Length: 416
Image 1 (cartoon, rainbow, N blue to C red):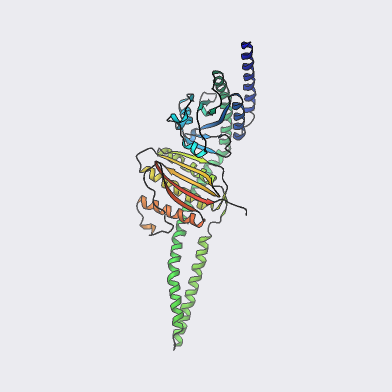
Image 2 (image 1 turned 180 degrees about the horizontal axis):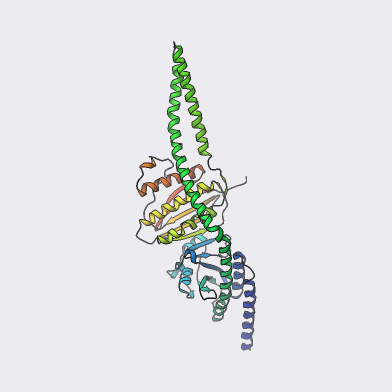
């Protein structure tokens, strides 16, 4: 009787494998593929959550495709980091009964997700050539994982690997033609934005410095015109001086309006900006041995200038990089996009104990006298803070356990 029941289970699982293989190869869209993986795995091995990670060889990292019941959530981190990164680097299967007792487990993600991982089972996903192309993680099992479960998971992982590689290659090919062009365009836009923003900030200060003495001169000119008796020639001179001051003041006002309106605001997705910046800095992070992670929650758009927000986030990331380069410890950089009430929140965390300069919304001295890296960083942050202030947002520095965070908050976009 037992043999008959075991044979029935084996036949059913074999049929499940065949059905799954057909389903997995029915789409090249990653979103559809990951949903199929979730359905197939959880039907046979009851667990609370399933996550799939794809190995991105081009960036020497892992990219999350699934975070169960967390629509729009994404994680990227270096190969060899964490449980999934270890499996991807070594190819070993990890069955961890107590996640928090394992030093490779990164509890930060639980904190961010407001979730508690008790146990996990992680296995590599291979392509036809035996190369690891992804990692499958099963979290918080509802019953012990049996030998038959392991055999099923190893069997299904082959089909997952083939489908995953095809879908990822399709995505890369589809995006590859535009990726380099987008990076070049982004670099050019950022360079132009940096030049424009700095120029605008300086010219704004010049206009302000001009406006004050202009007002004083115009006041004294009016007082001089009231002095009697007044020779005709002096009256003519004062009239010309007043007209000249009026024209100069009008030009200053128009120029200020031009500066303030140079970047039109529109509905903007900060997740797009963060992803672009992450792609732009990825190779530099690898070169500088910085372990970077990008964590994106689904949040509302904001009303902002894309060019200026690119510049703000670039400056915040560069500030974190500078702090890490002054630290002798492990270099970790984390970018987190989340919602905070009615606000959209961007946190740039770095693991360096080096303090980030206090940001000022006004420049206290000419940037042309800033010759040191620290002074340059202070100028970057002053410009970033000024831009955010003009967007009715706020930016602040917070000390964190083992490092610092710069936090940017903007109001969520509303049609009302």
